[in-house]
Image 1 (cartoon, rainbow, N blue to C red):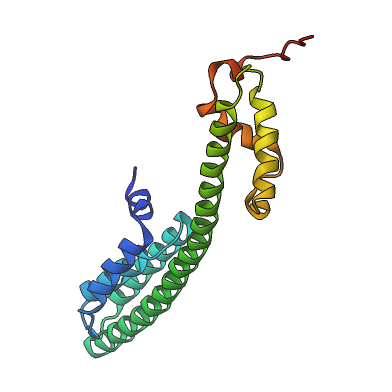
Image 2: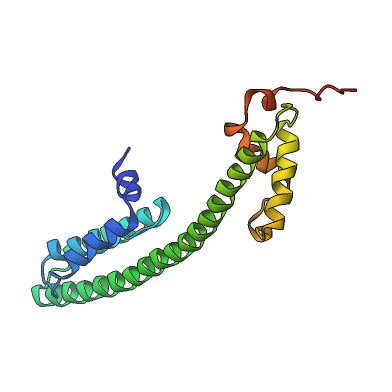
Amino acid sequence: MDEIDYVLSRPLQERLNECRRAANDITPTESIDGVLDMASMVLLLCQDRQSYETAAEMAGAARIELLSISHSDAASAAMRAVSFAFAAGLAAANGVAVNKIQGDAKRLTGLAAVNKAKGTVRDRAQKIALEHWRTDIDKTIRLGGMADYVYRELAKEGYVDSLPESADRIKEWIKDIAPDYARKGGRPRKTL
């Protein structure tokens, strides 16, 4: 894993927090080291390898240009200007990162609610199946038949919005609690 992969593998929230801590110490600077520190913070907020490499290339080019300025007053003014530009870029990148984190949080919150509802329906499906198999004295109800029964019962109980598209998924939910006879393959025997 190279340096870029390492940086990008860290959670965005962690990288954002690190930038915020470092940004508190930023003041307009006249040193190249200060400008490079700001460039490093911007690199922490990159979302992918391509943007990281592009930002690193630009920071390197800025460093070379700053080193080439021979007049000390002009160099100081240029470094202050670059430090303000980096601070502006950091603020913009910070906003993008915060928006991404907030968007991900909203999406995951909605997903968590859906998963919780599905978990409740799954638990209810297993309870219905267990109760019905307990009453199966002749041991004739197979997994597929039970899945159909449970699907219909859940629909009657008002879980229509949380049900999967077919009873085949219900079969997956209840197979772990099915008695051995219900797991047998093939059609059940016809009895006279």
